[in-house]
Image 1: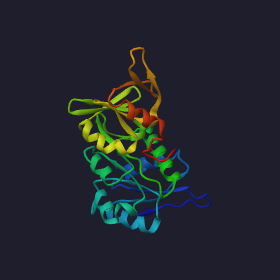
Image 2: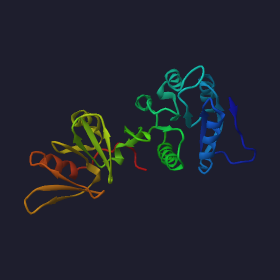
Image 3: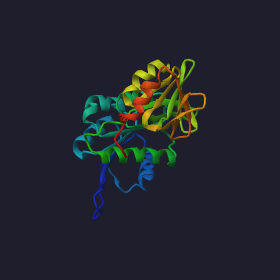
Image 4: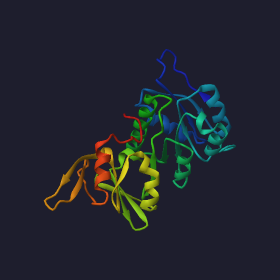
Length: 256
């Protein structure tokens, strides 16, 4: 385990440990972190055992964690330490097939190598938001979708609405959509407690994304979302949906 200290430099706001058995990968994370001066690297680890020791001795706020390492892999580290005693974990790996397992282990994000600066910036924004909220902040609820570029994490507050698409659900984030292999009914049980309400048989809407309810000349009710999307509300669900819009919706994450 290598530790880092800068003589005479002000201590970073948040302490970072990088765990990866490849020196080039550790250097890459350092380079990506360089513009984010609130974050300072205090240690590097080459395997799972060194990582467990660093968690005890360095008390980092953030751990960039590879999955496949000698001795103990990234999941072994979390299992032995327990999720409750882990800092904010960002998995950094060459493989996208472990994404769902990573979020079951309560990771904050999952980055697939090589990481672009834009994707890393999104991770750093999430880290800063989580750490600024304090240790008692609840983790952001997320869904993991598969894209041609690998796994992508979507926090629930990013998703405007969800529609049924045969055996899939289509998640709408502004003008973009992503398919998730899960029925709308199954998904409703996961997101219903986080501010999503049925608009009609084939659609769930994030209530705090609704800007107004529009009544058409034909007497139909349409939910107008902040993204510009318009989702019709069925007669059967109109009363419950309207009531949900009027009351404060539960948030899936603390405000930024």
